[in-house]
Structures are given as structure tokens and as C-alpha cells.
Length: 59
Image 1: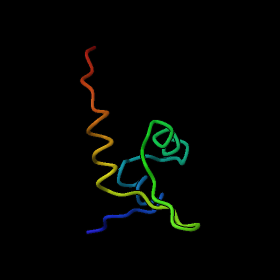
Image 2: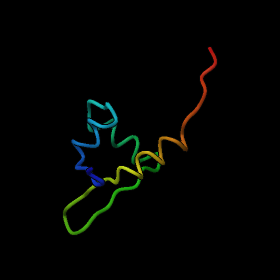
Image 3: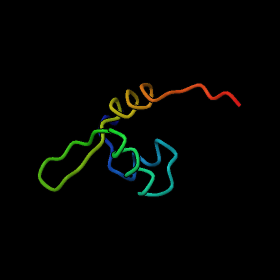
Image 4: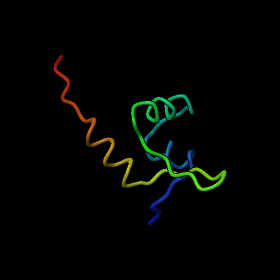
């Protein structure tokens, strides 16, 4: 299984259609891994980030 995603792979995993949506998650604290010019996102970091930001919505 892939542990590190490209931005496009991360967007597919998250169900996000735009890079702006991904940038919004970065601004909210989703970490990236950068080595040189290569940027990746850890699947486990995405899962942890989403778990930490999980909320119950009461209408």
C-alpha cells in the first residue's frame, strides 16, 4: 500500500476536486513532507488530521 501521496493522489483519497481545497487543509494544519522540490503527503498524516478534525453536526 502507498504510504506517501502526490498532491493529486491525496486529493483523490480525500475526495477533493481542487488544489484550493487541498491548500485549505494545509492552512488548517495538514502536514506535508518536502525533500528538495518533491512534496508528498503521508496517508497516515491525512488519516490522523481528519480524525482530529472530526465533528458531529447537529442541524
